[in-house]
Every structure is written in structure tokens, then in C-alpha cells.
Length: 335
Image 1 (cartoon, helix red, strand yellow):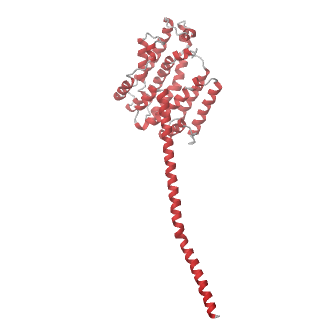
Image 2: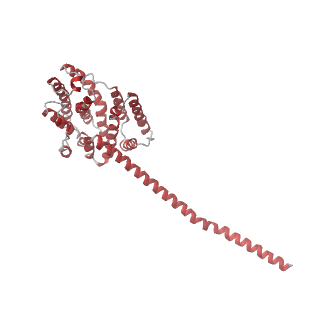
Image 3: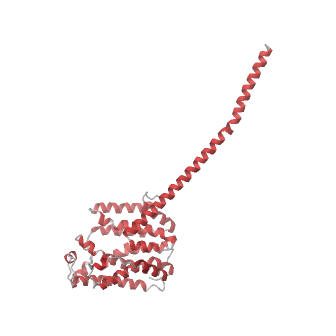
């Protein structure tokens, strides 16, 4: 009996030993699983960062393709900016293009207003670091964070584009200049911020260049608008020369129509000259933002050669030397 009890004790002791051995071996068996979990987490993190990088590249390419197809001259100008400002400038140009094409892409003003409200809300969300998942919005948010862009200029561009949905001619040249200041000059102020330039003379130059650009854009778009039976040229100048909206819709090349174009083009030229009057006080770092003046000069010279016939076929062709002219002006650091 004592032998049986001794045997039972040995069995129990053996079982306890095996349980203890298993208990102490558990951490060693679990440890590899922990490594696997950690490794899986690292792989997931790498994949997430890769997806984020891929998405960022997609957003950048989206903006680049949009600007290249819709604002080729602006695209060329962006390429001549310093590398640290290039991506942000493309985001700003894409934002501007997106707003500019609202007017022509909607059939009802209400739809256009809804799209403008989307961008107003988007700007608020960008400055709360919560941009919507949309390529231009995301790139714009990146530009705001990188360069500390002023919210007022972005909002002013949207507000002015929204007013422009009224689809009527400008009452006078001053109204066109005000629109150009708010829509085009504001964009130049933002480009200056991308370049890290804070200079009152550069701001004055940007104001006049923006006005010149708005005026030239209005002239360049006249054939397109006329084909859609719309005329946006300042009414005061049209009335001064006895030119009706119907004259432009018909594509008239009479002297009174060309006189209207001459007066408007002259006002754009005056603003370019005013901008250049500040050139001695404008820092060299600001000149890349103003290289677009080459485009404005090119159009004004060509419309002059066409005797201010805004419908002349030569004005429909793109200047093949424009990229070289832009590069040369950029190299000289002048505007």
C-alpha cells in the first residue's frame, strides 16, 4: 500500500512538473507570435505610407495635367519657378482653373453657386486641417501648410468668381479692373507668398499685372464668348464708339469695333507699364511670379499687328516661341 501511495505521489509530481514546464514554456512559444504581430504592423505601416505617397503623387499629377490642358501658359510659368514653390503654384493654378471653368460648364446659375459654396466650405476646412478628399483641395491644403498662405486671398478669388456668374457685361473699365484685381492679382499675391516674398513694391506690381491680365483675358475670350452670343466687354467703351453687342456677336471688323479693342488693350498696356515702374524696388526673388507678363505682351503685340481686329485668325494660333521667351525673361530676372 505504501508502494502504491509512493507511486501515486510520483505520478502527481510528474504531472505537476509537466504543467510547470508547459507554463514556463508558454512565453517562449508566444514570443515568436508577438514578433509576427509586430512585423505585420510594420508591413501595414509601410503599405499605408506607400499608399499615402501614391495618393500624393496622383494629386500632384492631377493638378499638373489640369493646368497643362486648361492654362498652358500658366503651366509654363509654373515650371520656371524655384522647385520649392513649383508644386504649390500648380495647386494654386489648378484651383484658379477649376473656378474659372464653372461659369462655362454649368447651365444654371444655381448649380454654379453650389459649386462656389463647395469651394468656400473647402477653404474653411483646409484652414482647419480637414480638407476634403479631392486632389485640388488636398494639394491646396499642402500649399497652405507649407507656405502659410493667406486665407483672405483664396476667399477673395472664390467670391469674385461667384459674382461673375451673373453673366453680364462689365458696366465700365473700372468694374473690369476691380474684378481683375480680386481674381487675378490675388493669385499673384499667393504666388509671392509661395516664393517667400513680402514686399510692398512687389505687391503694387502684382496688383497692376493682375489687372492687365484680367483685361487681356477678357479681350482674348471675346471670340469664344461671341460665338455663344455673349459679350462681356465694358459697356462704357462700347457706347463711346457706338459699337453694339450685336456687332461683336456678328464678328464685325468695322473701325468702331476695333476702336473699342484699342482702348481696352491700351488700358492693359498702361497697367503693365505701371507694374514696371516698381521694378527697381522689387526684389529679384519676386520676378518669377511675374514672368507671365511675357504672355500679356505677346498678345498685345499680336493684336496691334492685326490692327486691333480681335477676330483675326492670327490670334487663334499659339506662339511657338513662347516657351523660349518665358525662359529668357526668367533667366534675366525681369518682368
